[in-house]
Length: 265
Length: 184
Image (tube, rainbow over all chains, first blue to last red):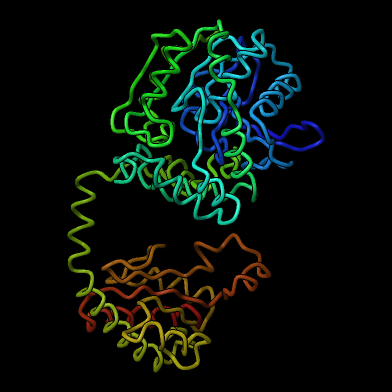
């Protein structure tokens, strides 16, 4: 659906089903240079089983207009503005990669708006190689190609897809290339600049879950385990042979893990 | 649901999966797969025969007194003749359209009179198929709509099959004879 936030028209996927607030909706937050499409197979899975789902494209991403947001905190504020616009009091967050940092920040700074937090292939901080940031600025397509290459595990590279006919790498490249120019660069810079992850994790009291990709080259497994430790959660799922693009690469395992964690109203 | 919003670059494959799957099911049955594979093995042989019979049928119909016009991409007067020659040098399929003197009545009589050929609405079969769109598949159209669709009352569509051509020829000869009686 199209929604007006801060005078910009943005798009939020509802998983292909009409959205109706029931309890605490599942609130998907995409990663750097991604869009709602990285969560297609989660959004549809839950929406088709009666869960209220929102998976928004952040400004400059996917089908949303507006300038890209520069900091993780600004992204959190934007997500809260979207919740306000939709009249939603509390959500259950699923954040992938950079979306995990936003989820952490939301649960820390807006504790009364987040009931549960699931972090998928993420960490408490995401330092990004300066060459990649430079590439995202000057040669965006090369940065996208590199990220999609590193972002998929061995099975993703071998076209092992739960959706026959789809190619992970081509889909990933097209998904990222569909964002507006500059969105990826702004996202990567925001990740580098965010240093409050540890403070946030120490102060978050809502239940949390960590889903880790065993072969993640972008937010390696050890950082996911550290995040779990800081959040004091033992709800940890490690998905074998998976790369960073977990939600699209291993959707069934991710959905299974999410389903056991979240509460349906 | 807007497929582009929902699936982005994967919109088309998902349309194929959702709509195609609803219509034809998620997978081919083993028997159908076997038939398809076996059919493909002899496709090139059958195409040669389709083309050979089509050429003979074109010669036969072109010189027949009951036929007022004939259309096939391998005939020089066809608007796509040059394209067909370039893209389909070995032959341009086995579907022929032709006009039967005597219009609708003659056409109807012809399709009811054939015995070797079958009166069916599909094309490309191993059997020769004939249809008279004006009195069957397109009979619901107004004369203006028929004209706009490039159809005429006297038009026959023939999908030439693999039969021995002499059998086909004598079948067409007797059916055309009956059709000519219908108009007179």
